[in-house]
Image 1 (cartoon, helix red, strand yellow):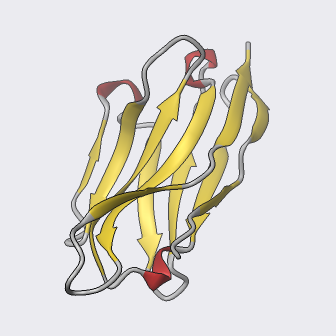
Image 2 (cartoon, helix red, strand yellow):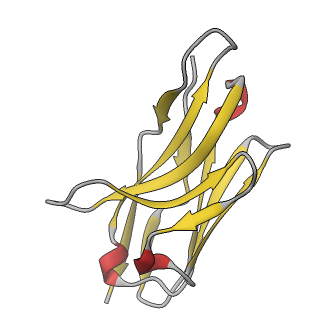
Length: 121
């Protein structure tokens, strides 16, 4: 059983910073990529940042220059450093892993339960 667990969300004023953490992907045999998604009320879930097994990163335009995704393989943890937060960043943030639990299984999406980020103006 693979369970991703996010932490680090909370309430912050505009211009502030938060760092989200996602642990639990150590049980995956192989990972194509990991990412952070977010979903605001009444909106579709969107990909915010992604990091591949080759350490390539990509970001949605609205967070470029403000957010940084990184991973610590020794700790089996992926992070999302969020700086200069804006009210429009308010959402539930979800950790995602595109991986497989052994050589014979297909790659599958694994999700965390989500962590709330609220940015006040």
